[in-house]
Length: 70
Image (cartoon, rainbow, N blue to C red):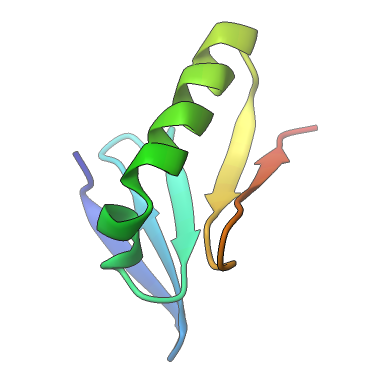
């Protein structure tokens, strides 16, 4: 469940969950539905590897970028 959408620019949004532990960067909010399987697989891998993630960027056509926290 997502709680907040931050508008970074007209074609750049950050969608966050309620406690800000998950942030997903998109070029339009409906992309989350279009890339549901890719996002689900990424989230499973993040959980399995216990990675600390700053945000997930799914603005690109057939891929996503996971920015890890330092």
